[in-house]
Image (tube, rainbow over all chains, first blue to last red):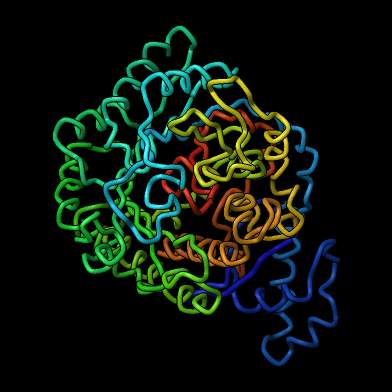
Length: 453
Length: 45
């Protein structure tokens, strides 16, 4: 299977099953409409006839022999022989956890999927005993995995920072005994950042996600405090300080774009102008009945915006002022292995979420959906049948993913979005698919442009 | 080649044979939390 498209003056051909990315000239691009595996020895007469008005015979046959060469090398029209790895896609140890340290929040963001912080279950903070039980659960279920990931999430984790510190201390005290390496991350809205917790985060957390939507008017329209005032003025200096002190360790400023700011390139650029070079601005997830939700009619506008952003980034990179935009980051040679790509997001299988009450869910997005509760830290229950179902919800377990050209890049999408908006974990949410494919086309095009020096 | 420029090593198949150690980051833990993108994760090997 190949996927070919033209963007920003580049004809790009992705060979799906080898991962090969080729930039081709016009004659090759047109010729590929007439060729498939097995590539014959001689250029099909039908192709020669159809293209004769546009290209010389020599151009056509020359291009054809290059296509044939790539096919013989196995980097064009390469076969799909990944189903043999299906047994590697099930029954993973649980090695990543989203710890809902606070089901409470000091902001009232309109688009919050967590029902302004409490996930519909009342405002609660996790106590240390529950945090400790979560670490014990992870140590017990992570079996052979060395690297364990724990994200402090909420609500707003800084509202319960003493417990964050205690949990980190407890986990670190077990690393040697169990032969594990904990990687902590925190996702915060920044309101409560101060010197003390900033230093702790910079010392202990391998990554930090700092929520901000971009321009002041965009951020403050939806990211409001309880008294309805905006959050921008309070958080920007705190983020700048944290990032400056952080040195070269990972972080993201992470925003959400909605129907209200489809010109989100301006927000990405604004965040960069504030001094941030690791930026993620992502589409809102919301019910179409809300005013801010992205709907199908917005797609052409968003596609154009992603192209605008991609071109801006190319220009900045060429001027030596490039920065990372999370959704355009792609390593065509050293990215994740194919097994990882087949497995997908890992929710409910290698990744779970824990609520302040010690309930276990497949991921943070499922929290509050009673039917999807997997167990409890307190009664020792855990639904291995549900875990197995999630393990099989991979690219080859989802009918419409199997034959999609983008399957090795999004890996089946977000299972929670699939459930919420397509009605089934196994049915990809079409709108998310379209956005993902466009981002991927842009990301590959950026590679083509940067190789074209 | 005159007509085609290949940008990468196209080593996805090779990566399948040696892959699956499971030590890399769960994709949702990186930044997104809502919009799954696996391909931008780093390999730990």
